[in-house]
Length: 331
Image (tube, rainbow, N blue to C red; front, top):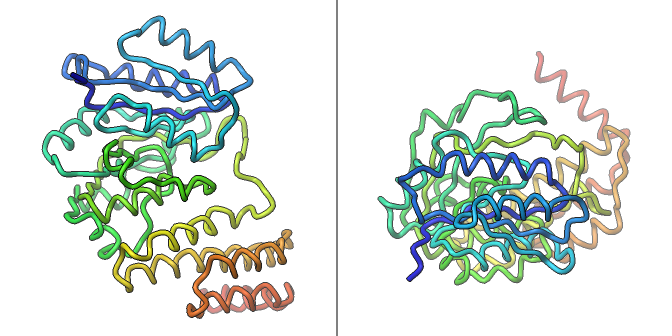
């Protein structure tokens, strides 16, 4: 009988040094309370650096705790996240990015939550931003969230209805009931870079959700390698276009009002990036962006048409509007 309650799943690619810090932040908390209930599973996405050596070292030192798996080729971020959850032994899987770390007491807090709430499908652990070396926090832990306290949403869809917001975008700190992830079957989100957030939205329609306010994750605001893995032709629109992919796949699960808000939030972000790039004279792939919006957005939403108009508006007009807005704000 499997006794593993929690797997800390670490999808990784070419970050051997950072990975070591992430794994050690888990091991230092693996006290007697957890005994044989904890697994650390590292899913290597065909790294070309020393990642495999780091994983082998940890597996040799902690054979009952650390497991590793390797993808034959790079299968992309979202598929690797899915792989680490599907191959996990734990009833729950805590996702931890290979360049982040657990905060002190994170495992104790998480075990308290899953012991107390047997029907929870997803837990959102709070985070604190750190510098690129994970040495100094850039903001107080939890910030404004500390005043609210922990919140249980039952049913989980109440998270969206009451907050009118997408789940957190940071992959670190997501805790999924493995059974819930498999039921959600997020294969239609594999070509996005936010499978964790979109799968969570699907799970919220079936299971309860828990938001923990105490900081449990230390995340780097910038990676020490200054590497951005998401740059492609549609950067920086990629993430928010992927949220529109999720809106299409989730429409039947949510009340019309909540679904409309999520759709509008994604379109507002696209509009913001269009204006920001026009003000800063950045490059916008107009034709490709217009095509994706036509494929993904709901044509009945006025924000869809606003985005199409913004793509045609000359940059000098947008700059003038920005200057006027700044002056009005300071009047």
